[in-house]
Length: 223
Image (cartoon, rainbow, N blue to C red; front, side, top):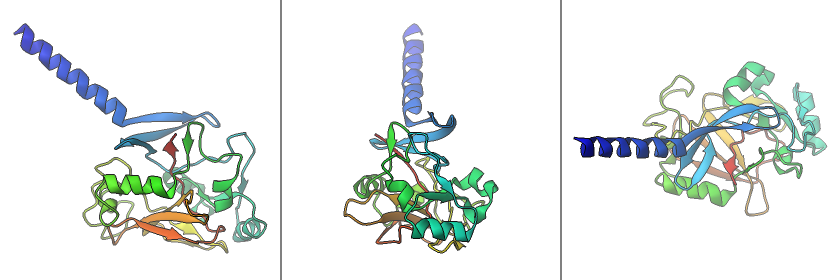
């Protein structure tokens, strides 16, 4: 009886330990915001979109509150962020949309201890969950509460919780919330790079040479 009890306790302890490694939280020291994180394969990802308004050194990132603000920031190649449709309520769910100038600014957009994922690191993620053609199934939030129909087959079994935060185009026109999510990547090829998922397909798309003035979501990866 004692041996069986010991084995049960040991197994239970191991399960708890694994769970603690696979999911958790971290606090961004800039604003003390707590983010969910999840371990997927060998990588530890944010399980929600970045929602910060300063660089790592404390310098503020410009908030573009109008289409004119957004376009001006892009034309002047200045880092900027906005909420979808300039509505802070959207930020509570989808985080902020950043232009590529914010992503590549040397002052650092990602929290300390994390970084913007490279194109190659996204490949590691999609390969681990079965390849780009079906990766969205395991990465997207399931159901149609946030995603529009059909969002077929999505399971979110990885706990990544990809959400359809849409985008802001170069001229300040918003598009796509509910239909797709787009995230910036740090390109390995000397050009802009992003990746995305949609409500009507299960693959993870890779996109290059987008305008730096577009506004996409950001997910960070632990160093």
